[in-house]
Image 1: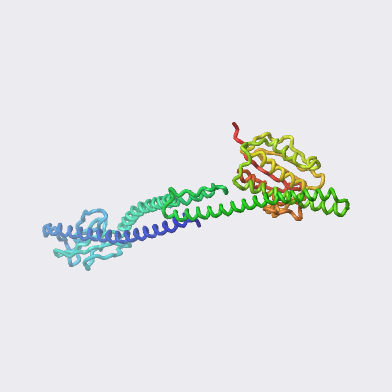
Image 2: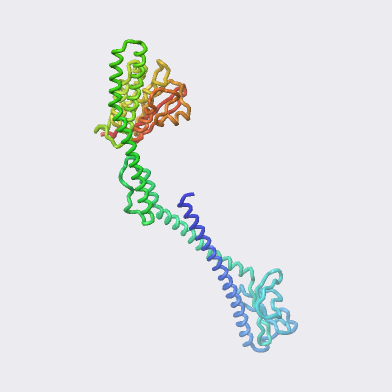
Length: 440
């Protein structure tokens, strides 16, 4: 779970729980006040009716004992009223009120009359029993309206609070996102530290620690590159001397055994020299070295240059697609030729004798894809995943195991890509994509 989602959930749930608890508390208190207000209204209505009845003449304030209907009162539609003498005779009642509303017990009560619940208040005054009543269903409807009127602003405020919380968390975590983007854009050879100017105080120690770590890592990588380059450079001179002495010894030796031994020694020295040359190239490609000032290369010329460095019998096995694109690459010519030469050398080595190696190009957006296809035994998915590792060779294959690593490093340095794919007809297709130079 991301930090942003964790903050939103923890703060949002806490806020919703608190808002809900406060709303329930407010609603319970409001319901009590609402009921007390309506009860007070019933009592006020009863007292008002008692005051009016006391002002009537005595002959108007009484009814005959046999009068079952009594006088009809006109009061508000949602309030029922009934007036009886203390002996039980009906004096007056509202037209929509139920029969038998009055009761002997004074005060408040909740009763069910004729299948309908009523909230009543009975008052005894001036020899009369005055009862006022509200429908409980009407009260509940009013309470639901109040609840809806209170809940709607709550829901709107809760939704607005969650949106404000999401925006605030996003803005609050923006410095972390900026640090992530700075690390994602960072190239291996970059020396400058992460910026600390607009970083919050809480993140300053983190950024300082990361800068220290990056500095130590860059120092370690630089020492590794220096060691690789220096070691390969220092070994070239004595290795050249060994090769020279072996050649001199071969010219002076006449025995078959001695000649064969010296030939094997010379082959081993040449193999070691090739490995050292590859190590130097890899160190330069991965290090902060500049190869030449010209940063654009003709694709066709690069292919021809790579083929010319091969042996004559190997050049005869290369088939170049006549539709090779004429494009300018934003990569130094020496590196393009080195990458293609390594791909051709690898394809020739792992193809059967006299098998043809195909070279073609395809434009892909802002890049040019070189496709070098061989007719060898192919590689499994596991072997293709290990092929770009340094010093890895398929089986007991000949070579330094650095050729494809150099190709991958060149592609990575200039924003390209390098992939190995299995061919449907057998063999392996090496696809190197390099960026095109901007047109003038």
